[in-house]
Length: 206
Image 1 (tube, one colour):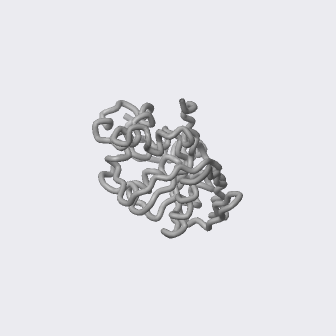
Image 2: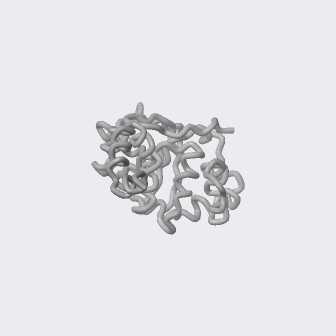
Image 3: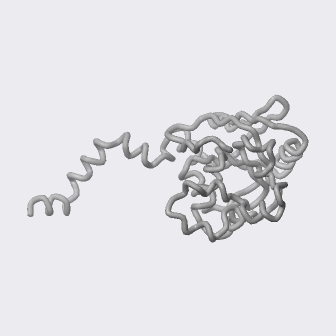
């Protein structure tokens, strides 16, 4: 059983973890979390059902079911990952399973944005680099250290320069990706703006 989910908070500059490889292009959000799970009241249990249908089909041989991957936190994928419908449940399911960062050839735009909004950095690498990492993962355990400041991923045997949108990188390093934490850190500014709103003043006067 995986440890209890702890959401990321504030600044994110380093991510360390074991890699889990998921081979295939155009893996859409319906495969990541099937539509029947979208009626949940909250996201808490979604990690249990990530890739539910694919896992049933592979009968225990899906990467997310293999014992050697149970503590993995860095997902390695191919091109156009997260395509399809714009459901925010997809990255919510991944982060609750334990994924803290994703390396891929490319990502669907809305999926990428949904990941950033909950603290999952998505990095891109050339096709040959992704395939090299996936091949390595297939043969043995791979632990990566990701440095967002340097946009670098390294292990004992492999080193890669990562690509991430500069705006996203700055948001993680500053903690601005975390909207709730940003609001709490600027309570005085929020209260000041609240008092300046003319319709609030009107309601108070009446």
